[in-house]
Length: 236
Image (cartoon, rainbow, N blue to C red):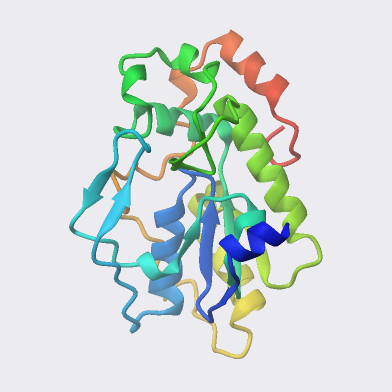
């Protein structure tokens, strides 16, 4: 981090476990999971949530009941807070599909763009769709770099845990156990029967917790393009 970054993004300390992710990776899903199973009696409400693409921002006046657990969608060099962090990764194909089909995540000029064309169109944002940039990476390039940077950032850092959307769907108790071991080792563990796996859809325009909803929208050429762009060990 440069001197300028230290001035623009000063460190802040927090004791709450914060959730970080690439957009549309299950951020609210994990926030709700942590809130229900680790902070059941704590007020985590953020009353107003501004979201969406920088050219088409929206405000959710219902707020986010778990919003105080949100870290950011930024690359790790911009992280402002010191404290426990969980980064949730998700298959880049699901991420791309979710961004494409979710209102307010694309520039208005791209309205009606086909999924295949979207996959190959450079983005005009960095980290979060709210941040205008000239980086011009495609969604797969952006996702792959984001995941790689976070995995490198987490190495040898006991206050940073990497988990996945897929494991939260398939094996929530193991995700719970990993978070408990990393950040709540001095408190009693819940049993599997006591665990709340969050079956209800949560978040801004939530999707059902389905791992492979993208499959019917991918052509063979799209799959080959993803395999060419993906360099990380989680989804190769």
